[in-house]
Image (cartoon, rainbow, N blue to C red; front, side, top):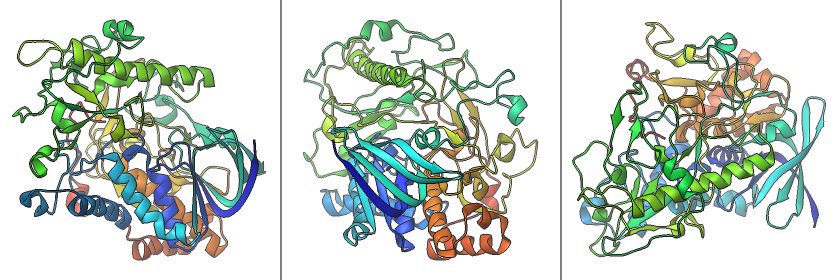
Amino acid sequence: MKNNEQKTEILIVGGSLGGVAAALAAARLGKQVILTEEFDWIGGQLTSQSVPPDEHAWIEETGCTASYRKLRNNIRKYYYDAYPLTPEARSNPLLNPGQGSVSKLCHEPRVSLAVMEQMLAPYRSAGQIQVFTGFRPVSAETNHDRVRAVTLENINTGDKLTVSAAYVLDATELGDLLPIVNAEHVLGAESQDQTGELHAHADEPDPLEQQPFSWCFAMDYFEDEDFTIERPVEYDFWRNYQADFWPDKLLSWTYSEPEDLSTVTRPIFAGPRESSQSIDLWHFRRILWTGHYQPRTFPSDIVVVNWPQIDYWLSPLAGVSPEEAACNLARSKQLSLSMFYWMQTEAPRLDGGYGYRGLRLRGDVTGTLDGLAMAPYIRESRRIQAEFTVLEQHVGVEARDGVIGAEQFFDSVGVGSYRIDLHPTYRRNYIDVSNWPFQIPLGALLPVRLENLLPACKNLGVTHITNGCYRLHPVEWNIGETAGALAAYCLEKDVVPRQVRQSSAHLADFQRLLTDALGFQLEWSEDIRATPRVKLNPLGI
C-alpha cells in the first residue's frame, strides 16, 4: 500500500456535477485544482447515477450559468455530430435525444461523461486540473478553523493520497467530508421549533429521516425475446412489501399521489410504442428514442428506471454505521433488481397477460456488469450549518402567505427553480409543495466556523424541506461553480469567504466576476419570478 502526497491550491473532493463545475470555474480563473471521485465516472447525477436532467420550464432560454448552458448545448452537439439522425431530428435545434417527458434533454450518461471530459480536457492537458478517480476521503488534518489536508483512499488498491490545499470543497453526494473535518452540520429533518417551517415536523427533529435513495438502471425491450434474470435473493420480501402510507404493494403499477393518500393512480407501461397517456413509465425517462435515428440503427428505445417503486426508504446512508450503510446499499440493489424481475415475470400487461420477458438490462449503458447504475441516486445530503439557511419561508408559496415571489437575497450567486419535492421516508409520504423561482444566497455556502471549507453539491445551508428544491442538476452545478469561483477569488484577493459577504465592496466585486467573467444569472425576470412551480408529476425524481 502506497502513501502519496500532493499539494494544490484548491482540492475538490467529489466529482459530482457540482464538483465538475467547481473545477472548471477555478481553472478558468487561473487556479490549480485536484478533483477526486469515488466512482469511475465524474458527473454524479448525469453519469454514474444515470439520472437524466430535471430542469425548469425556461431552461432553454434563461435560468442557468453560461457553463451549464454550454454543457447542455454540447450534449446536443454530440448527437448532431456522432449519431445518424433523421433529417427532421437533425434540423431540430431543441433535439431531445430520448424524447422523454421528464426533461427537454433526456440523453445517455456516456454522452454527459464525454462532454464533461471534453470541457475539462484543456485544463488537464495544461496541468491545471488533475483528476483522481476511485478515491474516497477517509481522514483529514485540521488546524483550528482551517482544513490543512485530506487523505483519500483508493477503493480498489487501498493506496492513500494525501492532498494539502489552501481551499477544500466538499462536492460529495452525501457531504462525506463534513464529519471527517468536524464541520458543524445538519442531518435529516428539522422540527418546526427549529425552523418555523410549515411542513417541518411538529415534534422532535429526526436525523434519520432523509429522502430515499434509488439504484437506477437502464433497459430496452424486445417483444419476442426472453432476457429474464435470475430471481433476486430478496424478491419474496419486496414482492410482498407494502408501507403503511402506500396504497398497494411496492412492486406494482400503483403509487400514491402526494397530496391525497386516498388517491391511487395507475400509470401504464406501454412498452416501446407511442401512447396518448399523460403518465407512461416507458416514455417518462426514455434516454434514446429510435424515431430520431435512421431506420434500423437502434432496435429498441432505451429507458432509465427511476420510478417510485425503487425508492429505498427503510434506512438511510448517512448517520448510520458503515455496516448498516453497506447493508442498505445492498438491499437497494435488491429492490431495483426485484422490480425489474417483477416487470419481466409478473407485471400486468396491457394485453391482459403478465410479464415483459423481453425487457433487457443495459449495463453497457450505465458502465456496470450487474446492469444497474454505477452509483445510487442521492437526493439528500448532510448539510453545513451555514451563516444563512434557506427556509421554506423564503421560497414556499403557502409559507410566504400571499407574498408574490421568493425572498430577494442581497448576496445572490445564482438562480434556480424546482418544486419542493420530498420523496417518501420511512415515516411519511411525499411532501409536494408549491414554491417560487428562487435565488442561491452566498450565505448558504459559508460554514459557521471553518474558513477554507466550502460546500459544492447538495450540502449547502438548506433544510430538509428546502433541500427538496435546491437539489437538482442546474442548481447543483451553480452551487459548485460558485464555490470554485469563490475559492479562486479569495486566493486572488487574500481574503476568506465570509469577508466577501461581509464587505459590500468585495461582494459587489465577486458578483461582477460571476456575471461578467463566468456568465452567471443572479436574479429572475419579474414575470418568471412571479410564476410558481406547478404541481409535480408524482413520478418526479
